[in-house]
Image (cartoon, rainbow, N blue to C red; front, top):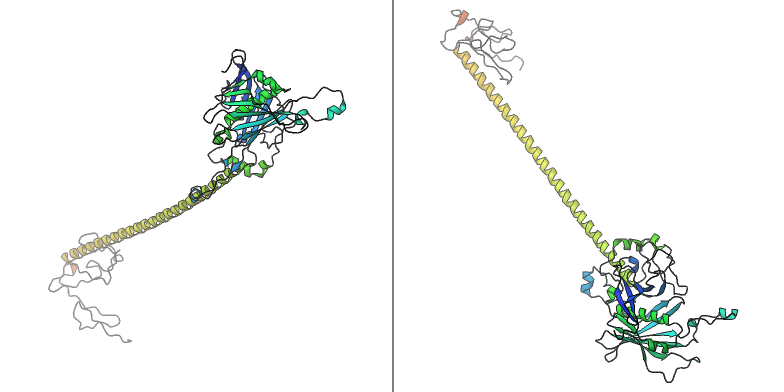
Length: 484
């Protein structure tokens, strides 16, 4: 603190724990700092506050009283992309970068007035500076004349003498700034002054956090609106601290990440693009009551009344974000399509392999079933053959003559009379016991057994005369055919 008797304003964080707000405390004549103003910034989380800077100065005790505000929309530059950057960004050029503004406008209310602050960059041996002008006369003279009421305000008149002020940095490595009176811009006759007074210091900005007003020199400005000058000094110091001594990406709320899908869809949607603008342009709301709207502030593009919406793109950065997000979504869709085709091809191959495996398994089961059936048939055939051979052997041992069948069917099961009960001749046409109409033929010198023992067997005579009487017993003689 330079002198505790001088009015000193302290920039402190807000007591309501809102990071984008701040408070201005005033200490005068050694008193304790008390709230004097409230600094408000738009919520950086809202889409409408992106790629721009805004600050407003409100009364600390009456939230509806707005003294002034500043809105900065930066200009952009498009860097020249390299082939490597284009390859890494999938053909999307690098994002536009903001430029440091060369001027900004402070809008004052009641009376309405615009103060343009022009920045002058420093060189190797000079420090940067910021100049602005304010009229000496801000209010109309009381008059009962109707003609006087039709005239414009003194702040808008070019004939009103203006005082030039200049903020200047004390050194290249210093953070202190000094505001001084640089003289009047014009005379009443419009001619330049030949000799102007030396710079008169009226304010000192220490460590970018304390603003001390030189009250004795302030009266030398000869201005009707010292409150307006105080507001301009405070807002100018705040903008110099945050914009010209800060990071541009943080100041203008520029997101390094690409734009989100809702913003892209809203920006590309014709319905949202046709939403009428709000009558309150980028006002910083803090109270549900109606805010004061300046009548002469230049019109600005406004966001939608819904805080979750986004206006159509108004700057190159927003357009780049939309293009980058569109390219990212197209790449994502192509990757998903490629992944879907690969998944479909893999599923087709899996189903094909599964069907082939099922076919192989069905063929294997069929072959196994056929093999089992053939094995069962072979076993049954072998069993029947052994059973038939056993019956034939038993018949031979029991003295029976078995006439050899021409064909041995699988279903025939011959049973001899000596081993099992006798069956009808209809079931066994080839095997019949002796004495039931079938005559046995002796093998060699084996004597006949049974009831026909000792009897002479007569030779059979064929009905067609195929057998002769001179044929030997037990033998058949085939006679040649008379036809063939």
